[in-house]
Length: 497
Ligand SMILES: O=C1CCCN[C@@H]1CCCn1cnc2cc(F)c(F)cc2c1=O
Ligand SMILES: [Mg+2]
Image (cartoon, rainbow, N blue to C red; front, side):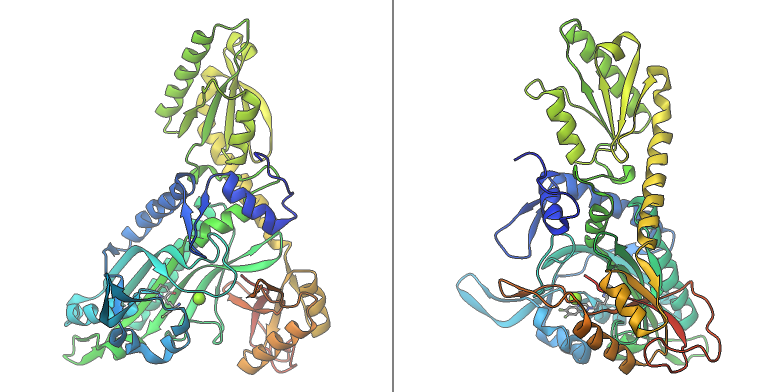
């Protein structure tokens, strides 16, 4: 059926229906893989364009590396790939013949790029080296797949830099983290919390991991939005990426790596969608405005079409992405429904009244506000779209903040977790304390592991999402919420995707 048959509160069913009825995704017969239709792919293109403009200011250069990795190369960083090897997909044949050496399909590209980095970096004059690539990635995840959020193939960018000093590398990590915050806030109208991953949750191959985390308001689950790692000299020592510094000493490069994936689109859908379907933030909408003529017996159809065409041309001159839906095989009501499902930010209706008064009827998708504007005021629409973006962002920030609660002890912590909130607590920063909280919260959580057709569903236990960069200072004598030892940092806990 055309309409979405559930409310957003029936969240996972709602999400599955929205992504299909908004024509973002088509299903595919390889589990965990999905077709990105033009309406959805356009969003990824906008993210690429925006992020490319940002990293260009950092002199990052786009490039392309091979997707296949020999077993020898992949196992170069044995210890940390160890934890991931179950996810690696391999090519073992071509035609009827076997490859004598199976080849891994890239799950990430450190082991592909860094041998080349070692060739390119000899002197400190070869630094900083900054490359990025936009590719697909394959990881044979076992958890239940969700389009955009968790898929076996996804699109991402991965940036990798090498620097002559630790300070420059660390500065790079945070500059990229700020870019990720901008992609989410300025483009997707999705609020994020910048933070640092705990030792247990960080990328094991690096020194520290920074992250932008968001919280899905409907279920209070944390969602990692993007990560920016300081790798220290771990990989440069492994791959011999070294250089002669200005004192003629051999020194290992200081490195960073950072990634943002198509999961960001899933976060945007979840935040902004409503019972009628997708709601697109204007800056990533393939059509920002759809014009719908309302044919009427007293109105000459040819004149109406000319008027609509004229309005469309004015909007194109204003650099807006506009579509005139003058198909004669669908009713206006059907068209209203369809374009609302697809999330078009503004609909302009032109019927006999508007024609006579030289105006258009504006219907705003995100808050359903309706009003008339004169044709000579059409230039207001650019500002109106900006106002819509800002209002969507403000609304999302309120909803996210409603899902963050404080707790000073275990009892309060579990009350909040069982109300599907994330919890900010003082914490001792001891890994075993973190592991105990994960274990106990799973045991005491009302939401147990659920097995659906053999797939383990999202668990009920809480994990750390990040230590927010912005946090109050902790004083001597302030206690960890769980173990009572001296607290060191505030950390945000939650169930996550
Ligand atoms: O997270 C990023 C940003 C972009 C570049 N890579 C880093 C670290 C990726 C961490 N990671 C994440 N997932 C992996 C999955 C695998 F199957 C595997 F072999 C390796 C990995 C793996 O190294
Ligand atoms: Mg993973």
